[in-house]
Length: 320
Image (cartoon, rainbow, N blue to C red):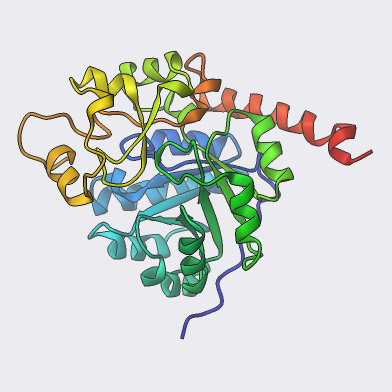
């Protein structure tokens, strides 16, 4: 029998109601630690640790950082990965207070995390997926909306939360197009509890992304983001400039590609000399609009927090 989902962790001490999104090949120990130290939630795909022993070490170090900060660390389980359940058991033995599941149902791990008292937030791109995640016993939802980087959804964020609130009253996170503190305040006004941002932090000083990837984000604008199925088999926001740099024409991609065919062509284990998704062909979201330089994580969070505080304490926000 499925247990009652644990309550969301206490978020009142956060500097800003923000999750620095988990990004494949980008969200490493250094970047995640910087986010936690800055007083927000730092998330990372467990796949990025590359081995179980490395993941154990990451969790140990992040537990230590978390113990001296108001921020939290949040592992991300890619449920389609063969190691997801083993990684879940390691997380259950750590000091993590919340987990994000993606690319697959959270059902196989909700009981495990309920016993460990760890809140589970599920990435969802449609209302139907949200209903299934709630039925599986999640604590919260991350709504992937139009403009989010990586594998994303297409729904309008205001319509999406209105639909979800008809059957779910738990914590909800907005993912897609966060350009600063004003965006986070707008998300809260719309009824979201937290915001999710990745792209601006790819271009942070602590990010392990290469110089070309960071420069492409700094130089791009939302018109330079292409929503395509060609590299993952699912709707994914990619940098058009990186597609062209890889020798491909963004206007001539295979939009009928499947997850299986794209894995053979562009996956890390693909054979041949073609470009690799995430490594050669880079992801980013519409929030490139707000990135004009490479800055430390603490500076990004501080600037966003000041803007957020100004909006939230204004007479307009208070309704007076």
